[in-house]
Length: 163
Image 1 (cartoon, one colour):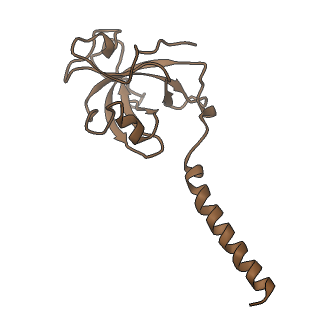
Image 2 (spheres, helix red, strand yellow; image 1 turned 135 degrees about the vertical axis):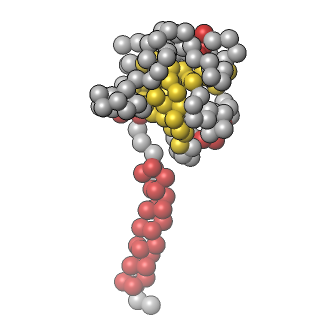
Image 3 (cartoon, one colour; image 1 turned 60 degrees about the vertical axis):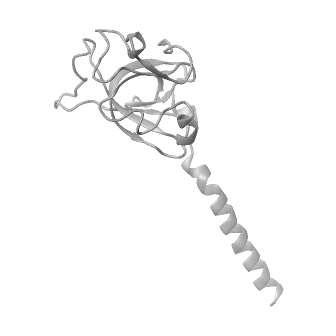
């Protein structure tokens, strides 16, 4: 085998190894897309969980202030937000999983919203996610942390909103 052919094979192998190593990094993103200076607190109804290995996401429909229904868009469809967390394995250490927060569960969570204004955010670094007892929504204007029998996922109080 001549030197040029050997160099090409080594170069191709290096490119393939580099591409394979870069794939997990491409699936990951910077948290600069979230407004870390703003915290919003929501109480809502879980619609589904995406247990992705990189970032578990909880999708929920925020409840209205009187806690008798969910917020709806102009066309009458429920508004759905997503809160992004650490990976599924790390979230599981705090008890967050598909089975611990099934669809229909009432939760309260603090998040840092996307800078774009889209209905999503990153879980606030302080404060727990609170789950209301089954079929028991909090009182008007309150969150699940105020309901007797609540469960906390993570440590601390519900992070307070900041603007």
